[in-house]
Length: 110
Image (cartoon, rainbow, N blue to C red; front, side, top):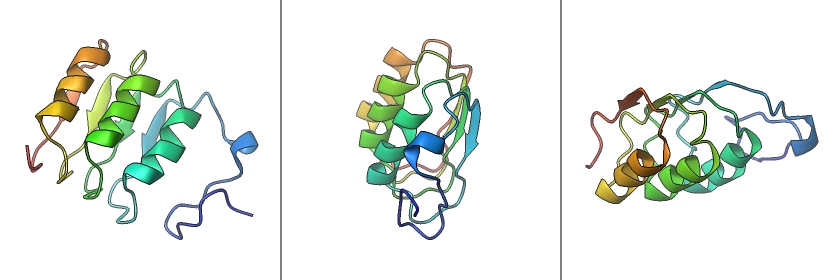
């Protein structure tokens, strides 16, 4: 049984997820949205690299979760094409992700 029913995202039950994962690429998965991110990000608190490029349905709520759950270690975030991102979400990332070295925000509604 899968933890999420999203066909594009095959994830094992939460107890089987590797909490030491450092890099996660969810590029171009059309079903990824703020709700999906709320289920994924807390499971991987030690992410260094997160690629959400071309996940058009993520917005400020996703950036808040990223800032709140993985800010300590995150040094690269790609949200290229996230259409629902605003100044508020970008500022939250800037305020919380102090180790961030690369932030790709091209083609957002920003």
